[in-house]
Length: 229
Figure 1: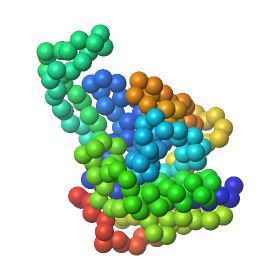
Figure 2 (figure 1 turned 90 degrees about the horizontal axis):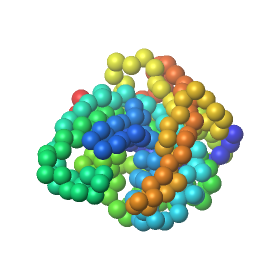
Figure 3 (figure 1 turned 45 degrees about the vertical axis):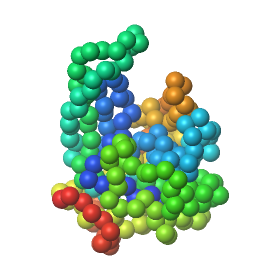
Figure 4 (figure 1 turned 120 degrees about the vertical axis):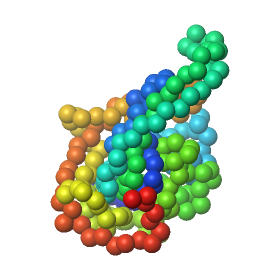
């Protein structure tokens, strides 16, 4: 299907895109979640948590994994944590937090051209700081591509023709994850219905994955890309 497409590069030494985090366990998917991307867009546009997001959730999303990240885990401790019964715990709480190290993604969004243009402009001059899943995970490459808007194309065509963000290491294939309009064998619970405090709710998103040989893609080195390896 032909559409307007917006590309967003996500490159950084640390990223985390959780979809199942509960209490002390903080997970991450192997690629950006739709809820994480929409939250990032809301920050760029200056939208409050209680603001409507229907114009963003309707956009179709795909992710090209230019460099698979290494799955890592760290531990954090906290005091005076409020428990499920509303009391303050005096015990030290240990939180296990998973993240991706040295990953590089190219996110594609397809849909209404005016909405995509608004997002594109907001990424150039974000209202609030942008981060890659957690506040301490800052991008090493701007999330704004000057030539990031494509007219009358498809997500697959755009992601197959745009050069790789970085030279892939130790991977023979590039993984591309597409949002599916029909039921598939794989899904994520990551389409946000509301980000409002006390009313955070998500629904299921079906996806499909395609593997393309790295030899298919071109790579143009960008001096602004800064990875730790």
